[in-house]
Image (cartoon, rainbow, N blue to C red; front, side, top):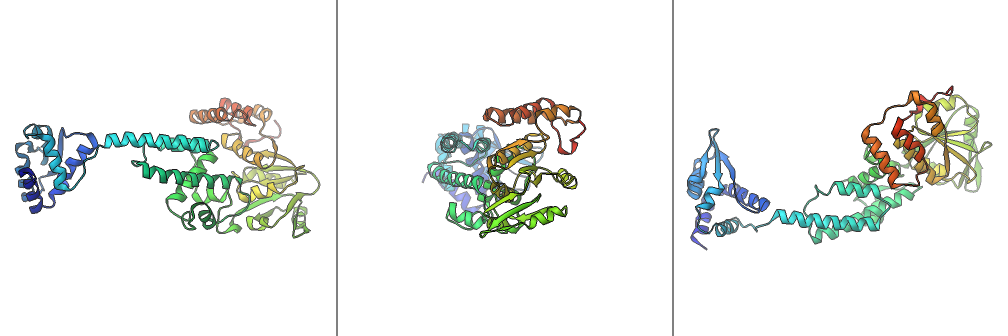
Length: 413
């Protein structure tokens, strides 16, 4: 041990609290790759013993400002120290620390992150919104080494497989079952970091950076993820009959004849083999509640299914059980989210638009709501990523002229 190391060790032995002050020098050196400039080491409330020890170590380079701050001029001090690099190493040794170059580590970590993201894009090209989300988080992630990268690669893969499963899911699924299936741990998705990340990914895929906040439980319920399947419901108005255990049940038809809508839970739908609306093969899916209730009061000749915004697992399950000859039409807001809802539904059953197709929007120019510049960019990005988007003309019109809210529909137009 050198004489300077002995002096440092002696001061630290007498005043252990000095370690916090001296560690700030190491922190700066790690962060900047050098010791330079001025750093604060306490103020006038510093115990006299600590101050004298610091002054003994740093001499006139330790000054007190007019506001009582104890400041160390690192540049001046190191200029007065023979072999300043050796002194810095001795400081690290005395504190039991290893010197680091955080600038270089951050550069290497960023390279590892981008490599991980590139591999993820190749493995899961369909999760474009998740790619963007991860890219936006690249500056906020903790430092990565190869070991951490391997763990993160595995975690992303399991999350992606979970998301893909939920996108195709038409049945109820519990968080415990989901966690056990994809993470070998039934508790891992019930709370905590992985559950939060899963909901963030689902949110990104559903709303494409939309500003609205969605509760994690609500996001999960869209995919039938719940430990209470009776809480996920679909409400519709129409003469439905369904087949269960080889027998046809038509009690929703009786409610329809009385002018009442019917509500089924995901638990009810789980055992249904097939469902169909009697008579008129046309079914309209309706995004919002007030327009749905208006259609019920009008006693429409076709069936109406209320989606409640983005369709949950019960809505998806019901539509998935309808015959292929069913003529599905969708009525919703003509904003980006509205046509995203229509697109989600079209993946379950082919559909056409109703009251929100291009000619309807053109007739309702007087009722259109403005679209923000950010939303216009989001629409253009969505169209660029999906050149075969089924509702591209309507989305282009919305970006250029504004969007039509369902409640603003005027049958006289």
